[in-house]
Image (cartoon, rainbow, N blue to C red; front, side, top):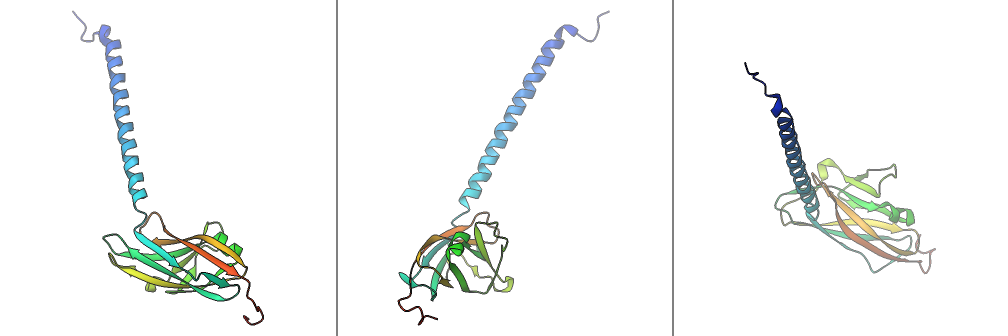
Length: 182
């Protein structure tokens, strides 16, 4: 009587089984890599939902308030709720201070661990930009030291993985009569 198990074919079956596992694993790895690339491409394309530009006076006097006008334009096809504006912490350390922002805000990261000092809008007063709508915001600032301040403002919208940025450059000179400015 012949055995139902053919042990002569066993090594061939194992070899074939391992090849199937390796091919399946390779296909899974390729699919995961493609999926990861698609996710990264999506996250990378999400920036620039809000186009931002700044307008500042050409020259500012030290210890005198000045306005920065921030123009925000929603370039997406859906409404965008603005969450906060960030100012590079290096600018603040150099002597630039935010005095006022409309709409009202509260300062977020007070630990100093982030690159940004985040000014978060009150939930009830967060501006919402409709598709293709633009908004002009006023940010009142004071520079305590003469010099050139150059950095970025970051704009965060709700459900946005990355911030959008606007350059900020301010030239500050010493007040010619500092006693008049106080």
